[in-house]
Length: 113
Image (cartoon, rainbow, N blue to C red; front, side, top):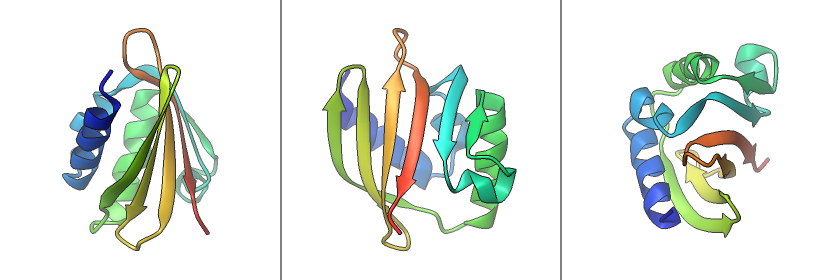
């Protein structure tokens, strides 16, 4: 996998606010973890692409100016970490673990502050 190209596509999909494009990278049974999910869902772990779509749709509705700038990409075995800054210049990291089919099976978001 070309991790730099993946990060570029990830950034572009988020900046376009295109949920179909974003979710195309995720498996149907993905597990997503984020402390920020607590505010909208009451839990920090989301199971399944459909639930993830509902969460991100609500999050995008609340943040119409959301945008990301990739700062760096760290490679691992079957995974990568995307370091990025959002529209408020908050540093964050998205850790993505891929299945054998190349789709994300597990994702975790961490934010500074």
